[in-house]
Image 1 (cartoon, rainbow, N blue to C red):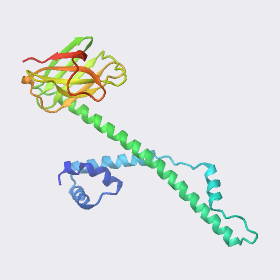
Image 2: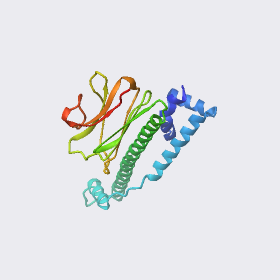
Image 3: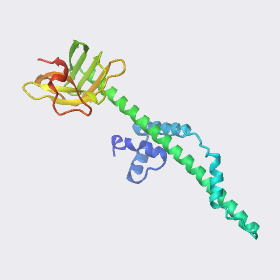
Image 4: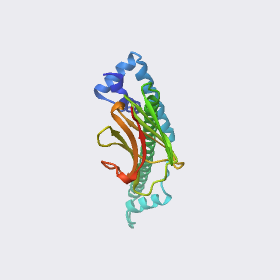
Length: 245
């Protein structure tokens, strides 16, 4: 297997739960000092270490012990033996310990999921920014500007896609979204994704993938219902950036 095929297993390996052919393949890469896999596993181990250090022990409520004891302690009997009482106490303490461990496990699980979600968001954002940077640095890219009310620019790359950067974008009403369109010459507008501006009115949106600049007449933005629509609402088109020749 290639390094690219193994990269999704780095975190699983770092957690110690990777098995099967993937484990054998990854260990083979590590054994021959593969730079890509070695660095990837090292980064994953750092992330796992961060997650382990981020977990805060959770103490169960004080009243929980009383409730557990009340549930398992037998009704007092006149001739209850010392051994029976000791067994009941041992059982109660065991249950108390299990509940304590369960609470810690649940809290750790929630913190792990929250950290993992944040980690994935950062990775996705980094990937998007890298794609945008590659698009802007493409020597074959074409840039057009717009500037009535909202102002900004659109950059089209034959290989990387279309990037929209806007300023002074109006805040959206609830249930509304901005939607970008690629309008071919003599053809129907093609939806190119939805986005929302930041609090300061700025917006950055990327539609990745090849684009035929020569056959593109314009790039437009309209205000649509949340989730986007299949074709733009004519009277809601607020930005048109002609691409031309």
